[in-house]
Figure (cartoon, rainbow, N blue to C red):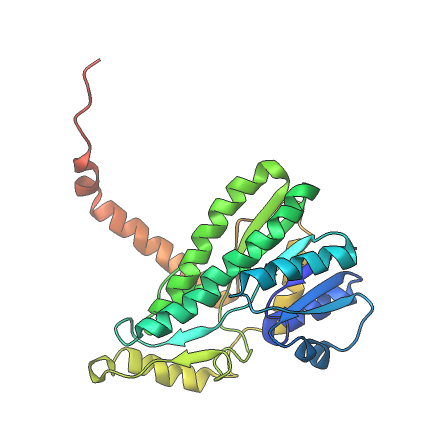
Length: 278
C-alpha cells in the first residue's frame, strides 16, 4: 500500500487522483483549504485522511506532513497539484496578481516539498510529482505570467530529480494539456484587466478560453489513471507530457529552438575567450 500526499484535492485533478489511488488500495492524505470539501467530493474512506492546508502557509504544510506520517507512517508519493491560472498579457498582469499566483504555484509548492522531503529522505524512497502545464514548456500569449510559474516548476523539478536520485527519491514534472476540468472556471482562473492594444492577441485568447471551457480534448479520469501508472513506474521520467496537444506543442517548440540555435550558432559560439595555446 502506497501513501499519497495530494495538494488541491477537493476538486479537479487532485480529487480524481485521490479517488483512483483509494480504489487501487492505497492510502491518501488529501489536502485542501477546506477539508470538508474533500469528503464531500470523494466520500468517507478508511484510508483517506483529509487535512486542512493552505499551501502558502509553511507551518501548516509542516503540520500536514507530520499528520500524514503520524496516521500512515510514511509518505510515498507527493503530488503538488494545488494552483490556479492567470489569464492576461504580461503587461496587463498587476504586481499583486503576479505575487499572489507565484505565492501559490511556486512558493507554495516549495513549502510543501520542504515539508515532505525530510520524510522521504529518511525512508530513502518516494516520488515527488509536480503538476506543471503545457504552458510550462512553451509559452502562449495571454498566459505569460501563469506559464512563468510553471516554467519555474519545471526547473525546480529537474534540479530535484538530480539532487534526490542518490537518496532513492524520484521527481517528475507532469505537463498536462487542455483537459476538461474546471480550470477555465472562475474558481480556478483569475483574469487581468484588459489593455486595448492587446485585443488582437490576448483578446483572441480570452475568447478562445471562454469557448474552450468544458470543451477541452483531455479526459481528466484518464489523466488520473496515468498518474497511478507514473507513480508505479520503476524508472519514471523527469518530464512527462500528457495529452496529444502537449506532445504536439513540445515537438513544435523543440523544432523551433533547434532551427534558431542553428541559425545563430556562429554568433553564439563567438563569445568564448581564445583558446590558450598548449
